[in-house]
Image (cartoon, rainbow, N blue to C red; front, top):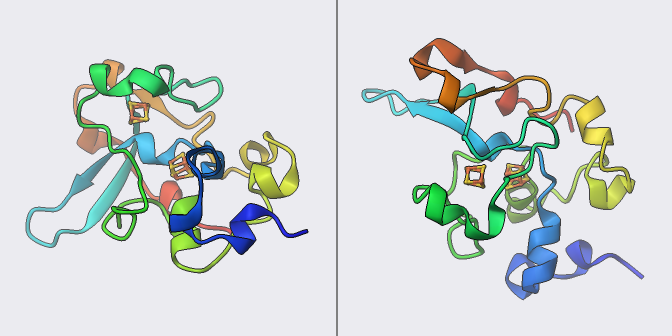
Length: 147
Ligand code: SF4
Ligand code: SF4
């Protein structure tokens, strides 16, 4: 039997299935900058104050909007507009018809594989609580997609 992400569209998924799709890379929780003139997107390695450096998960996911009102909930209704999400993001991949990558925890069965392959933010971030000027922390690695 094929797994749910291969037989269901994003709009058909249950809330539980939707949440399972997140690979936990943490890249969407990095501070991003947009050039006023060119509208070019730049990622930084400055992470939201709620992102755990240890496991790359949000430390208050269920009530995160109390602490970070500007956090974005990714839904089937807004996924097409969230073009700032990295190409490796499971939601973007499925929305684009690319399927999940072999390193995705649901496919590999190994939650640490993506860390070993350098897909996640693990070992590469600083907390926004410790940074004064985010512009000094622009990086390109969040935009890379290895598969
Ligand atoms: S970028 Fe996508 S897959 Fe990665 S943590 Fe964010 S929502 Fe999950
Ligand atoms: S509040 Fe949580 S989910 Fe939202 S950006 Fe921060 S760490 Fe990520």
